[in-house]
Image (tube, rainbow, N blue to C red; front, side):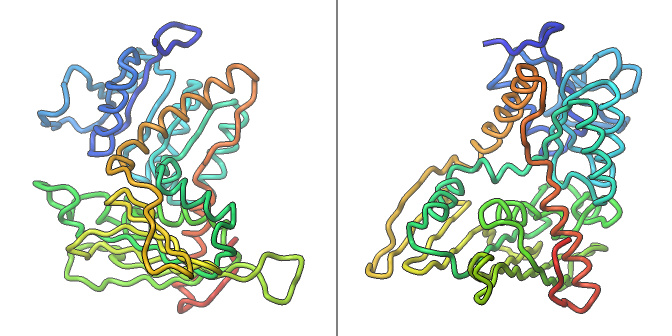
Length: 348
């Protein structure tokens, strides 16, 4: 089925030509072949066999001539807001790769502009569309194993392995000025934990350089979340969370473990598996298994973006979308905690 706008076939521009940009382009080509798409990059020395040079535009004049109705912003995080503001002037709906910005003030300014112009601005935290994590969230929402006591979220992968055949030291991930570092680059964990458990009331954080990687930003981050109270009946029961992010792990891992009153829930991202063990059982029970769940999450995310645009066009207002502000609030608080010797402080 064709995807159409009131002006004809939809046009999508992808800002950037990195791995995530190519992933989005491939998914859209397969699922929505009638969407006309082009890359926009100022990299005049682009030489990549995976990108058709005829699909690349390099000047603002060419961009205006293409006249896109949608954009995926996948350039360095420090450039997200300036790029987005330029596109909003032409009434373009935006899917912005995480984080939405490296500055909370810039992010609020962007969202205000989007709301004023009735544009969809959605941040690409695709873990919310991972079917395994949706199972975990449903188990918790339904209190299948009682209340949550604490959770542990971990993600790690050796940075030089992220983009083979490139110099990792020159990547956005390795450069603080471009929004690099474990806290920003691996902020999916902060977003999905806020989605499942709620935004924490308080957060502490330690940022470190523990490896021999030649980067100017942290390669390790450890955060502690605090929620609720045991003494105030008007607030949720107290629970805690621990999140560890790193660029050093030679054996990749991305997982979540949730300890509840009557059982434990496990999520394995790489294996596409959710399992649980009740307190009266000696074995884990597999509740979900799909090795392609990670890939499908990007597909579900883009379809959700299209659905949000369709809702706006039908009802004249933008539905609630994940703008990425919750995760950015936590990042901002985490950095403030680190600067105060990892003191537990309120999430702003």
